[in-house]
Length: 329
Ligand SMILES: [Zn+2]
Image (cartoon, rainbow, N blue to C red; front, side):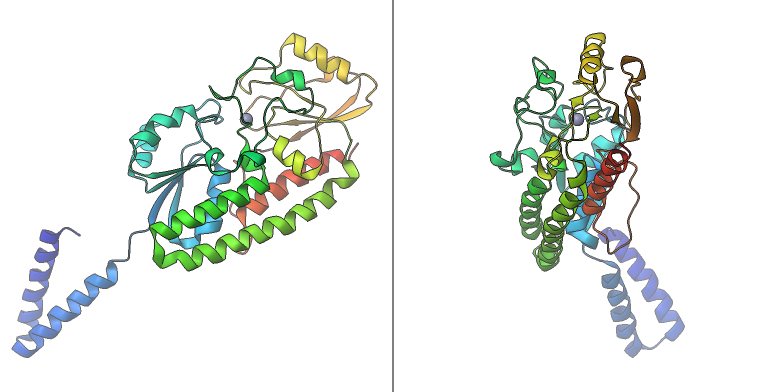
């Protein structure tokens, strides 16, 4: 409430109070009661946190609980090709804290993050080098990566770091420290919540590894190279990546290459993504193909029950969708 507005409300209240009671002794009581009422309404302002993709929202809410307002930038298209709305820009400018993947993936955000007064915590810059994967590492058809840079100007790091439970654990610690410095009154909550999430990741990682173990070596294709961190932690490896640039359908040359990779294969899984049109591969192979949706951004995830951690739910769903299809082979 503005100070002048407060005075106005106060004086109106005083008049009402005075005329109804008319006792000088009670005048003081009225004023104190009204003052108490005003302070009760003045709850401390929550931290305004803006996140660029749903998995960062899951992590933020798991760590912050009720102690922050976490808002997601509208999801027009994939992070690879995003269009900003004026309301998103305003949200970024008004934020206290911005959680994003980093300029390697989200070039469109750089100038707004720079203009905002908010503390910026890019995921890539706040996880250590040894937890990064470099696109020239052997993964599926490694020649897919040659000469391309669909992840922006800096192509030295695979930017899909939210898929790495280990990198996320590191980021959670960084987030906890920043939040505690910003609102020391809630430091204890941030510590408890972050410890809970980190322990749950350790426990779940073992469960996910057990879950995928029977299917290691089964042939499958992913739409774009978003899963390598998770595959590395779980011991899985896709046969091939269908497209290097997620906005562009596989070329005829690429389809020819896929056809050769599928020779001798009787069955395989093809994982497609909600943001992109499904690529039909049946005409390039005689193998029986099972199509399954994978959601690497958790964009279809609804709020789980209050005792479930959202990040755990997100990865569990991916692992469930992966093994669900692989179990049909
Ligand atoms: Zn991607």
